[in-house]
Image (cartoon, rainbow, N blue to C red):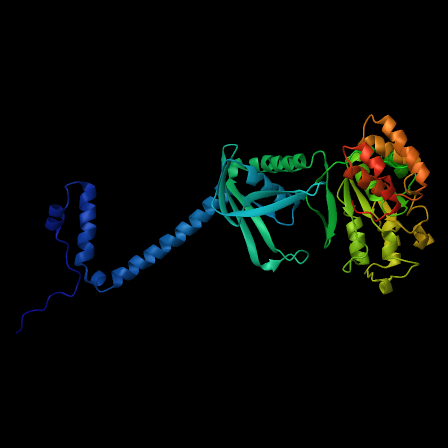
Length: 449
């Protein structure tokens, strides 16, 4: 009879070997025992142990993911700022100036300003680009993640949608309000003492260029009592909100400034905005993509403390017809404009200024009260304006002013715009005698100095 075959069961543990391989401690014996069990076990050696080990690691990984997600939900908080929100640009500008940040991804924003003398100042701003950034704000550590969508586009601007996500400890969530408030104050401070120009961009208003330095109301010289009359009327309107509401009258007022080109209509509106600490929303009615619905939407969503400016209103409409034969096209109908100005869906608490060089081309329906409540002629320069402009450019030159006025009357120049006078005075900014010698250049309205 042949010798019996070795048992097919698991090999018994060699406790003497385990004891010899351990350091004598209880933990050492456990560690040595596990090692001996794995090496001497035929099932583990055959691959079953590896399967069990893999399953255990997968379960451990799943448990780790769930536990980390639970910890994230309990201990961390996110704040998402989409690119369509006003605070988005405020936050990026704030972070670009914030010192306690760590950024490895930057984007450049180039701004340039053309000054009155023709020179250009260029400013480069390095703002956080797409990617992850770290900041420490009021003792709280934050992860800032700026993400750009590669598929979704803002149809109004063609730029991809972006979001900025701020992540911090749940206990530090109160700093979000402080941070956004600080970013807002920084943005307002940058515009302090300046006038912001807005233009329509799709269904919304967006700042156009850099904020302009406020223009002093005294710098635009209109005929006697004209400027004071407009300023007093606007201020009276702004202080009469309760009076309008109690009587059920729509709280809005329209102004029409008409007169020849270069007489200072637009310049005065800019100076008026500075005097009132208002901004200006410029709306081009001849824009091809402007429709009645979008016009209504824009006029009902004008930024606070803003004047709506409709320049060259005669160019968009002429006798109730769109003047396509003259090269102007518009998606806005005449009735759409009238309804936007004083229809059911028209805006409340709105100041609208319209300008035109040809008031005779305007339809009478546009000029009725409720659409145009105050109209005034801003004409070519009168003797009063010529004298005031001379003394503004050449202070305390009373004698020179009298010589200039005497020669101005002798030449009988007739129609001279304030823009022509300003061009002459700017060219001779420090030499009133030279301005007097060159006064005959005013005969030609297209003189180039």
